[in-house]
Image (tube, rainbow, N blue to C red; front, top):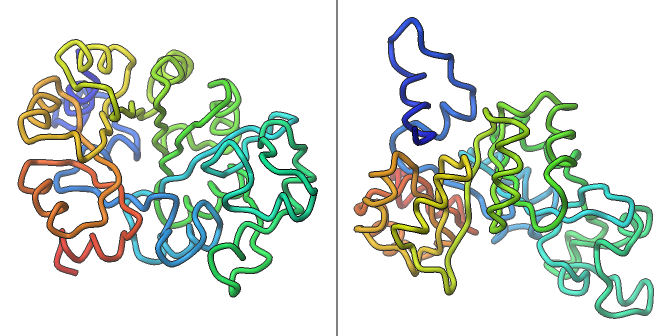
Length: 274
């Protein structure tokens, strides 16, 4: 049975139905969810605590982030595998193209992850996944995107923080999504796709087989018919990354369930009029 159908059964008045988790309730609600991409990344440096705090203040439904592992295996929040674009790693260590996964946490914490965006954010550090969860979960829901690392590490952290039922996890690596589902069947999961991937019937079936209840696709490759096909399999349809007001309105009219955006405040006004 598709995960969303199970979820909807849980939301029914049947006394025998299982009580849905907070994250399942969030995903099942009607109306498009507004998801802050890397935080409120038009107003603060992406994937940093200031960006997350701004998104929470805006009341974004979810706040998305990305993570890699440090050399010791600690999940650290950053989008790129290399440190150059959003930190001063080359200036600090005299080396270009340093990899996150080859850098000790202590060295990662020496880096400035804010000044590239605006001098007023000078001194902003790369947050760990644990630090980010603490901030975001105080007023929103975290959408965790795994860039690299095994499922066990993420699941262990969520268990330690008692957040398995409070967050959503997504990845372009569908095996990772399936691994997460096997470890924690109640965890709300999304599979990411787009680019050269065609959203074919076979691809939709493969997505459902991972245990995910959400398909998050490149909005430029997503049509009204494809959204309907996602819904027909009992899944939710999300899209990334939409900052254009007209495109957001088109997607809402097409039945989209979640919009990932760099400009959550703007898109919230477009979608909800406030």
